Length: 170
Image 1 (cartoon, helix red, strand yellow):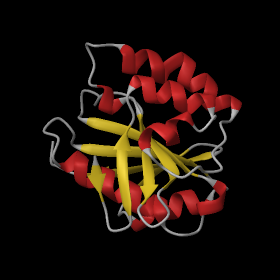
Image 2 (cartoon, one colour):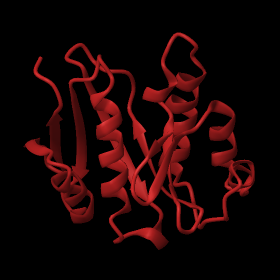
Image 3 (spheres, helix red, strand yellow):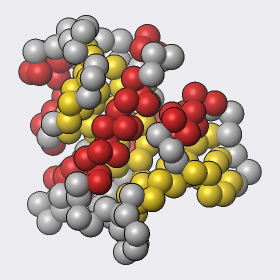
């Protein structure tokens, strides 16, 4: 678990991910948290079924690179958003992140803090040299999170900006 000023950032186990998907507050009950307004989009549910759960279940992989890391507000004792690392580092030592803040907690800097916590964790991982991310060009809040954490825009496609934070020289 990672601790920042206002948050605990906790990697979820396979069984906790199954509870997360149910959205029935069983995960909050297990973690002794107050209930939150979390919902799961069809895209995220598909990602869970197709990628996240199979990768976390694979004992040959380090689950920390595939699971959701959930941000928990110390003040409210609630889950406020999540970050996922999209698989183990590639041959260049790069990991990709994706993230989202629950609606009621947006605009409070929580995701900037979660990404910052993951950066500090990643710096301690010998095999991680850089972090990448992609943001929808229209999602200003999402790319501000990366800018505040010193990511550099390295390219773009028709709909996305691509970002990178170099942690170590390769």
